Amino acid sequence: MLDESIQELASGYLARIASVQTPAELETIRIEAAGRKGALAEISKGMGKLDPEERKRIGQVLNAAKTQIQTALDGRKGEFDEKALRERLDAEWVDLTLPAPGPRRGHLHPITRIQRELEELFISLGFTVLDGPEVETEYHNFDALNIPPDHPARDMQDTFWLDGGKLLLRTHTSPVQVRGMERLGPPLRMIAPGRVFRNESVDASHEHTFYQLEGMMIDRDVSVAHLLYFMKTLLTAIFKREVTVRLRPGYFPFVEPGFELDIQCLICGGPGCPVCKQSGWVELLPCGLVNPNVLRMSGIDPEEWNGFAFGLGLTRLVMMRYAIDDIRQLQGGDLRFLEQF
Ligand code: FA5
Image (cartoon, rainbow, N blue to C red):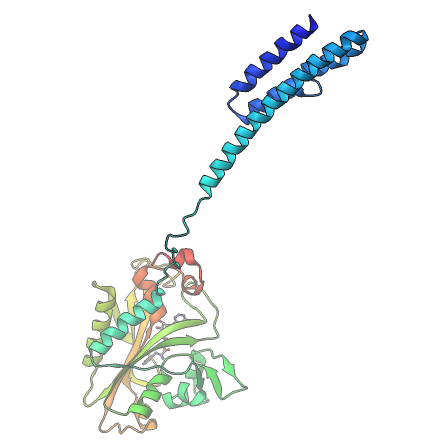
């Protein structure tokens, strides 16, 4: 009787084991059939009550059933393990003969992009592109631009001084005017894009490190009309649309007369925002006719030659062109920002 019920139990388990679909189902049956609290274990526990002959016989039947069940469990587990391994291998498969994907391509920084556009424009107008040192002499940054040591205009540009005096981080690109005049002499058409530094507090429109693009033309009979022509050409090329500008008198010791050319703020369109300091206008392009003292100091005769100069705020121009509302984004190095360009 007992041996029959063991065999029945075992066949029931074997049928279920044969039909399970998942490792979890298999585990449930394993616990039921072969676990310490399973049905066969319960029968084993009752064996002590049988007489020795019967115990031996039933023991053999029970062991045979257990072995059968264990073999079936192992077999199905092996199947599931193999299937899982095959799936993993399929997922991890790599074709080593394919060409490598190569490094991700970057692109130029928006400031570099606009700088290059302006270089191309001015080269097409007959200008030379010059470069000057970022660590400058006091002479080139100030004295030669008609700003002597005790002149109040020195305070207009807060300076990072180096080496206890005489050397500094250039506060504007205007010293390259001086170097251009010294090296090349008149007639001269030059631009000088580059990085400049000022010891001032940073906000939405002011950085301590930013870019300017200097321009200078020296020839015979250069007038304010020439200056305005070039400024208009420059702005039209960059914005590729009508922009509203205003010209007002501006004071710079190296030009006379001097102007501030402001552009109507393209971030807010005029009503005022943090970039234009609520004024609706952004200072972009100070300019003027070169002061005769500056020509004389660089060995050019102001009786024979004159010219214009301008100092474009390149970083601010980039902000206006792409409607960037905080200057700090440009040097922040955040790829999420830079990848938009
Ligand atoms: C100058 O630096 C003169 N060298 C410009 C010049 C050249 C005038 C030739 C006449 C003839 P200014 O300090 O205003 O001027 O700066 C020029 C431009 O740089 C400003 O109009 C503005 O667009 C930009 N700029 C000035 N300070 C900052 C700053 N902290 N952050 C970003 N841009 C600035």
